[in-house]
Image (cartoon, rainbow, N blue to C red; front, side):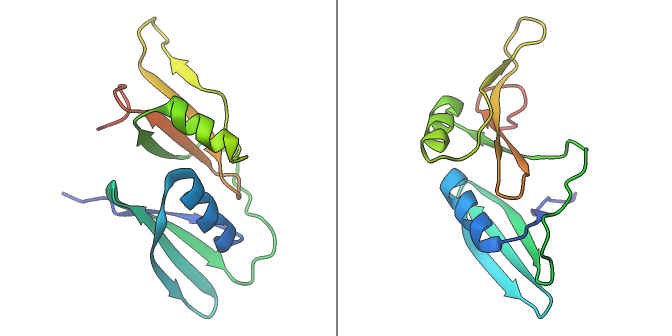
Length: 133
């Protein structure tokens, strides 16, 4: 069986992204590999062995076009309300809190946060159908 270990996103300014992910989710640099044309930075925390890989192409000067797909990363937290309030107070871009209950029963409580490159991070409260915890 394969074990997922990381997901990669392309970023324009890795210092800005490292700071954002540390501020938003407490991720820290686990490793960084610097090459002549690109740099890889791996972020993680004690909650999971999964890492987020930030890739910087050093000759890139324009932000990446994220397209019109709806791919995203997701994290699970004890309290979506608490993290939403904390992120908002830090001036981080967050969407509204959503209680997802299409048939009347609450399936998930979540919100989306937007990182410096425009990636959407779904923040799901523990205890719902989709948190996989």
